[in-house]
Length: 214
Image 1 (cartoon, rainbow, N blue to C red):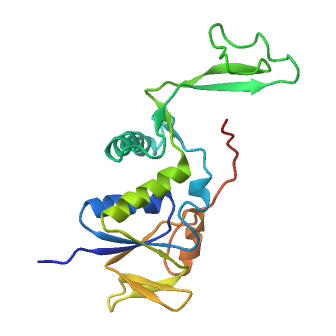
Image 2: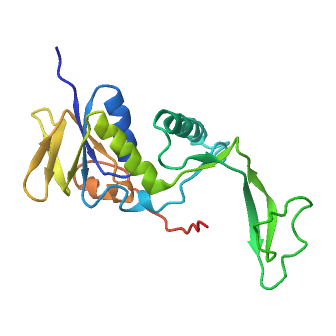
Image 3: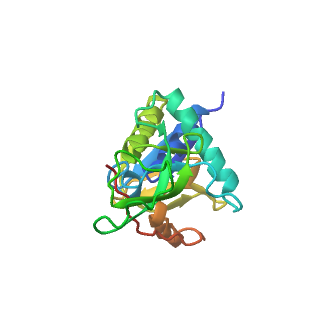
């Protein structure tokens, strides 16, 4: 009987956690290497906003639609510990004083919204937009992956281990230890640029944004 494949995943954010969950569900043994803590960077501080069709007409449209469906499936399968919910979404502008009053379309006012904010239009409905708590989503997926046999190790990846053919067979860590596997997944978000020292990867850049949750 063949042994399960060991897959080393560099990064304990949302992508690393999801990769670990789906690999484990298919019989592999994921080993997640995280230098700080799960969801400790971008994945724990994002808006957690999900949209079905906002990428319509772009190369990302099919990916966005598949992702939207998968979030609903994961919440149902894993008892939704990250607060997944469908919701109405609106766009608006804020003005000083009462400048925004009377500028919202008829019927668009929300009772919980300040009179200083004018709604400019509906962005989505519960059929097309949803929300998760991003840190809880990432850590919840990792817990589910661990229940399937995934491992989480703290450490900073310093390089790749390769076999005689040049294929990646694990990673070396800054503390001198190594983690062997059958394949390596780079899932370090904007920090994936660090892996360009070991692999011919395209550059990945992070963009700063702001999301306020009330």
